[in-house]
Length: 346
Image 1 (spheres, helix red, strand yellow):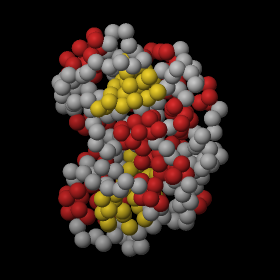
Image 2: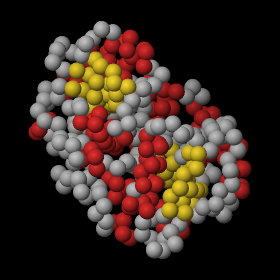
Image 3: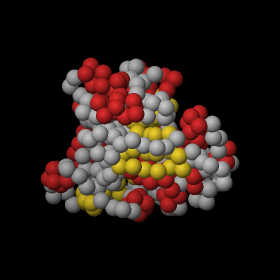
Image 4: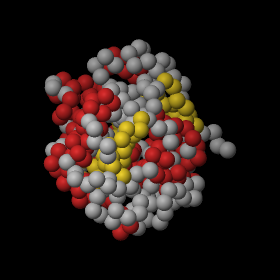
């Protein structure tokens, strides 16, 4: 076994969520093991960043004005180390909806990202936005779409027949747009369909109140078994107001479930060619899209089952690691580690 490079990942949010699921995959994926030895360190959101010893240091940190001084000091202390930042949060739609002082925000982001040797965008849409706004130098920018182990999703039987159960899966937060979905769903006259909402978060009470006494809408809370949640639904609706990538869309594709989602940010990549996109957050538009989706025969819909995503993710990281360390793990391109439940591309 060669002496693999050590890649240290820094994160400042230890709560369950997409970022930490991706980090768990990085640490446990057999393909990633062939490119480097990956480790994780949780750091404070507001305090100084520690000194680190690794061949490459990867930031999954939130960037803001409060973080900037410690980030500058961290760069100075690690002047000879390759530093990489993965941007999991900021997007064009996020900025449009949440940032009142855009000039100030862009100044912070440009200054922060300039401290890194590489900036990883998690979707092509996010990368294109960064280029247009000149937030990161084009030569430092890469696109690596995040992934988790999708084998349990691919093992599920695909959706069969016309959808009867719509699944809304994710944190109950304004970002996810579940309020739009509930209002749109309540417009539907169909009494033989249901909306299942899986997740927890700050908007739980407000969303339950919005659902009112509609018996077709059910709340299930958070689940530690996302594949079982996916098995219980026929169609996945993702009405997000902004979304850097959208793991739920990728998991739905792997499970052979149709995806109906907002045409914003990274969802245009994660939902792929199989996705049906709704542009805008208007209640009437979503109600019409739901009505159309509920009439479609899922058996006739082709699905790629998101085959090869894990391999593409590992290969992209392998290339980045090779650029900084010279270590080239060619085994990533030929491994069949994830082929057990994979379906051929269609």
